[in-house]
Image (cartoon, rainbow, N blue to C red):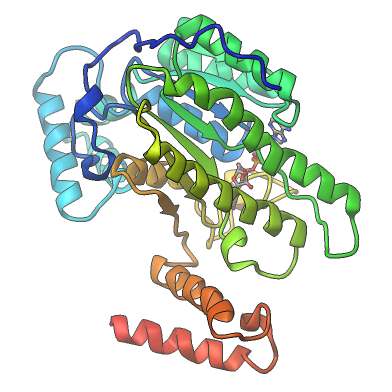
Amino acid sequence: MIPKSNHSSRNGSPLRPGFGAAYKPDTMSVADELHPVIHAGRVALVTGAASGIGKAAAIEFANGVFPRGEVGLGWIVAVGCLRRATLRGLHIRELIKISTIHHANQQTTNLTSLLTHRLGLKVAIADLSEDALQAVGKTLAGIVGDANVLVVPTDVSQLDQVVRLRDKVYEAWGEVAVLLNNAGIGPKGTSWEGLDNWHKIFDVNVFGVVNVQHTFVPSMLHQENPAMVINTGSKQGITNPPGNAAYNASKAAVKSLTEGLAHELRANQSGNVTAHLFIPGWTFTGITSQTSTDPSSKPAGAWTAEETVLYMLDKVREGEFYVLVPDNETRREVDQLRIMWAAADVAEGRPALSRWHKDWKAIYEEYVRDGLAQLE
Ligand SMILES: NC(=O)c1ccc[n+]([C@@H]2O[C@H](COP(=O)([O-])OP(=O)(O)OC[C@H]3O[C@@H](n4cnc5c(N)ncnc54)[C@H](O)[C@@H]3O)[C@@H](O)[C@H]2O)c1
């Protein structure tokens, strides 16, 4: 049984923006100047934050979206750019590229600094390795200051450690606005080999997520201000490609439990919490490249962790539940076709994983070609 939090009163965030009742996740957009959940002064908690996607997310949360200090000309320019970028279908990743080019050309000095050196959220980070976590904590403290960073070594597969994590965060800041439930591992476990790995994967990828969700959501529901839970899933949990049955099954479970969470939160009268399923594309991190995470060895097809995180943040701000992230190899339309094919295996009674079945492979490829041609 999970010990209850001592902090289950209706804690407002220290910077209370008073958005409460007006919060409509499905109408929010990146262009809104103050997102009620992801904005300066509120609290983000990231698990699996010592490396890869979790580390990049922690840094983005610390950076925040909005500038410190007075609203000046640069800020107006930045907001204008955000609006135009949104209108043109760009997201923040492209905007930062644009601002960086401006900066390089020295045409504008303060747009980049406005977009990259801002007081953002307070950030609590959790992971296994204390040393690696402290190094990330140092980076975060350089952005938001020591007082706004909490480093809590935690094994998410251990419920008592997750309870300790919750107590530390609520004691320090009295709320969690964004919970990125992200820790994950991927050692191989095929259908009849690697039983130990099956257990390890499920302990972290499934029970880690469940432990965090069960421990934090009751406290988050008692907060006055809106909050969100973002669980990291995987395309492998949706289309189930052969290669690592254990990982795929764990991520299929994350999809299922996050859909259940979203529905239950929607039905809950007392709460103001939304759930999101973060589905990264191919991202260059330790989990996909065991040999080196040196940026120079990133395969062309993969996105960096920063790109994946910026895209994800853009979409959760817009209120999307399924945050399906592309990469340089797979565009969104291809993902959509793959997902629809996988669902049609069930609906049409085809063989399991027909996409990789010798009698169906060619038909699948023709389906993708036709699907993409229709879009052109
Ligand atoms: N990189 C990709 O292409 C990709 C694609 C889809 C999904 N994902 C998912 O994204 C998430 C982040 O992975 P990543 O790509 O950044 O890999 P990563 O290996 O760089 O990061 C995973 C982090 O989780 C931590 N972790 C592992 N077990 C833990 C535990 N028991 N308690 C706390 N922390 C633990 C690791 O120490 C590591 O820092 C994972 O859930 C992964 O399955 C990644």
